[in-house]
Image (cartoon, rainbow, N blue to C red; front, side, top):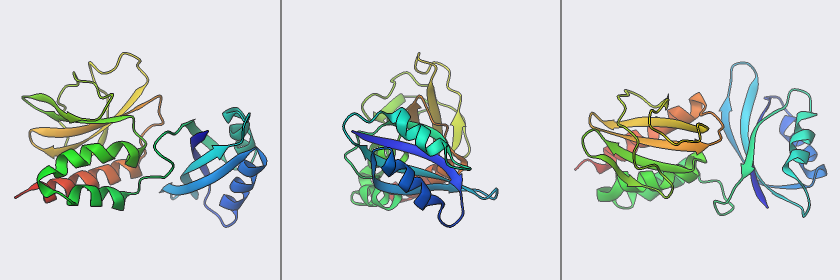
Length: 205
């Protein structure tokens, strides 16, 4: 079964190799790794897409990683997005193929790009517009100037959805959500803002 593991680890030579060895010994097979963030504290945050051997529980992988010095598992969940991490350049390609539909294509690719469960465009007057499957249809428009974490009133009732949004223009925003986390990192917010700005620029006649 595929899982996506987000892990914080020391940003030093050999650290990633030790992590890969621990995952392999615990019954996981790494398919892809993406660096999400590097900090000035000497740590990095990586997303690891992996497959598990039959009978291997995710707790086993978490324990194996957490036993490594300086390593902390931030989050783990099943990953059913088709087996590949969706990179930012692929996202850009998706919404540059048809400039007239760039903002809709942007919404379509934000889920796999940011490991979010859904994405939606929200207009100040008209409310929810183009959305992916599972997106709430009652989210309010929020005044934001830059990509940010959002505390959304009237959002999903589970109280465990993590929201982030970015400004398209003065009357429209895009919002993405993760059920159960993890929190959106500053680097992810920067990427979100950059992609939304690119799509907005491409969509302008």
